[in-house]
Image 1 (tube, one colour):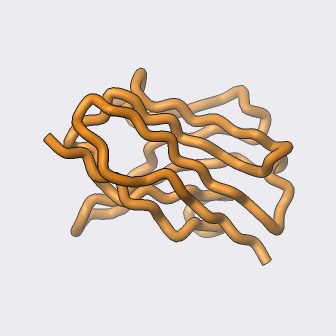
Image 2 (cartoon, rainbow, N blue to C red):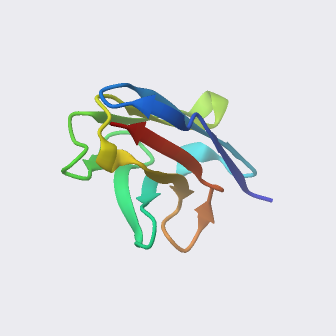
Length: 115
């Protein structure tokens, strides 16, 4: 059974930092591209960051580029999203994903940025 368990969300002041983690079990993480999405209330999930299975190709939502960094530790079967210089518009529920929107999802973790 594949499981993705996120952690690291919380309340942070504007300009602060958080690091989200997603522990993956049940699959070999090294064979999957990974994604982080976020969802604002009443809206669809948006792709925030992507990294291919080789760790060579990345994509970032333009509004987070230069502030967020996606990374992976295959040995620990964990993916990360380092978020710096957080803004109020980054407030959302963040989800990790393996294999694309039709595959595996975490349960989500709330990030709230206070102004």
